[in-house]
Image (tube, rainbow, N blue to C red; front, side):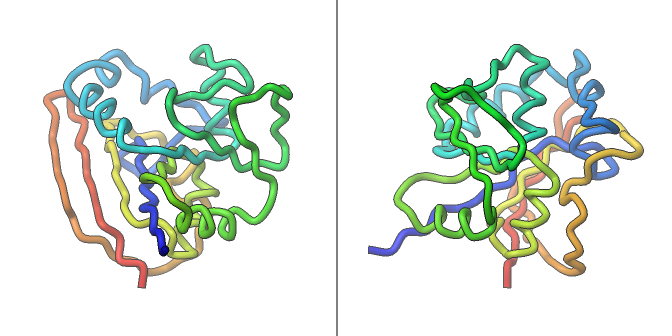
Length: 186
């Protein structure tokens, strides 16, 4: 039997395409007006569909500032996989750490039984998966902030071309815009 799990890069970004500021700063994304409202409820509904969560080390460690303890899962009820050669988690960790070829591992993961895979962050990880043509859908929560320098949506990805088809657009009163694209990975 053949399986194909969709990989969805669902991430918050600034108007200039940054997923974090300098030194992984997320403060502007967590201002009171961006942490409340219908877009938060919609996000919580959307992530219920994901079975597996992928992220880079710095994305996982960003959760520490919000009370996440090393080894805890950030999103209950989902398998968690952190791609890193540097992170050290307790022996009883509920989080899997993968130190190896992320592209190869994600390609394999997409062909195993299961539900959709959520790439929730890590610009470098996203860039490598995008360049390999593994990201099927891109869901951007476009925040009305400009971060200047920081972590780009696709890290240092050198991919020069790619297209997507807009599938959904939702504007919220607080200035947040949700954009959903089906990527054309040919």
